[in-house]
Amino acid sequence: MPLDPTASMPVKIKKVSPAELMIVWKDGHESHYPSPVLRRECPCASCRDEMTGARILLPMHVPDNLEMRGVHIVGQYALQFDWADGHHTGIFSFDLLRALCPCSYCRTQ
Image (tube, rainbow, N blue to C red):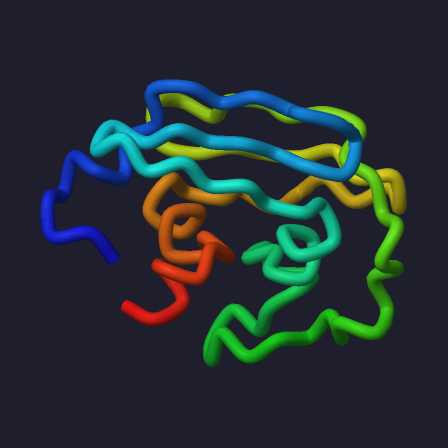
């Protein structure tokens, strides 16, 4: 997670393809998210236990070729996705998305 609290603010959000989302963050870092990776991390109450945060949605139930049909900004703090599997209730805060960055640099922090 970045030390600068404003680093988790996106300056550019782009659906590169149905299989990939790209976010450029205020600190200049660029994150690329494969659609199935984001879907597997959905924070909604259908996918995570509300009390414990434990995963309910099993990763094996999300196909590797799952596509993102739409991306919507929620206020000034989050994104919401429409997935090809019909799911659309998860709200991904910018802080969560930054923490989920799959790049090798972020994975070692």
